[in-house]
Length: 254
Image (cartoon, rainbow, N blue to C red; front, top):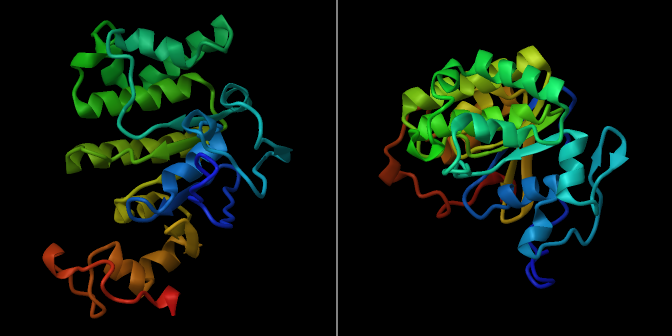
């Protein structure tokens, strides 16, 4: 609840199994980012509170503790919009991400980041504000890795990127998950890309959970195809102007 007035989420329940990628789908305003901020502890910075229910991580209840403590437990949120420290170099940004780890772990994780993102190694001395959008997205993912995460909360990693860069970023997310067994909760409006790497997914609408299932089930769901993947019931791809997302009654509302 924001400012003790606006109830953004209403009784949702989601689970991210250890080492899995879970997609959280929904339109703008559905409550996806609020869900991530509730988990990471950033909700309080926006005058928000969890008024009912609880959030657990590895059997430990984390709602009510501050965001820095949650980060130290291994839950790292990568916020929408590629939030970087633009006046610092690439490497300085990365080192900020590992500030709570020891020197040995920080150096190890820096090598790991440069292994996954060799372009960042080549740009390590560049002022980060001069990076391209794709390079900045690599930087925020790399900075998250510097914190030695057990779970990463990714908010719209494809936002504003070209299709080629989107493919590269999602490939790296899948690779990090497979290699490091890092759990991922992925908020993404590009439903096709999200469920291409996720094993399970949830759909939020107006702050409520309306649908969940395996990635394969969601991929074959008629409503998901029509409202999120752009296919008609017959399987043909529809033109954007023909898809009126909220004019027809979705089957999950029936």
